[in-house]
Image (cartoon, rainbow, N blue to C red; front, side, top):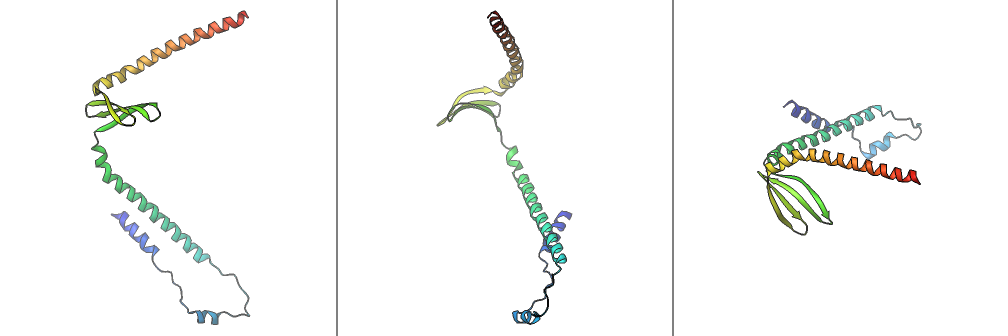
Length: 164
């Protein structure tokens, strides 16, 4: 609640009129004397006042924006948590064609996306979780087998070059 009072006071401070003596055009012409030299006008007070108003208005605008964003986030939080569908990933197959995995409840759907969306397969979510746990072990063994084969091929190429 204290934040609201601070914001209200800042906004009210922006609209408080500055004390300026109003004069008609005739009165201002009478005050001007052609014989006096033009002296520089000291505007330090008006510059400081303008700077303070600028800073306060920026604080109010940015603060209002942040409050609005937080309020909208709080209002849409229930919508985000109610979503039971999550996108697990996809693989592009060509121009405007892909295969997507979507988890809905306890089922994972394999969708073909192109000109239209078609259901390709249904998989249990437990099967996907088990496959994800086994996948890193397969990737490590495949990469080490590839690395061994690659080293053997490099050794063969070096032997052929040495013979030349």
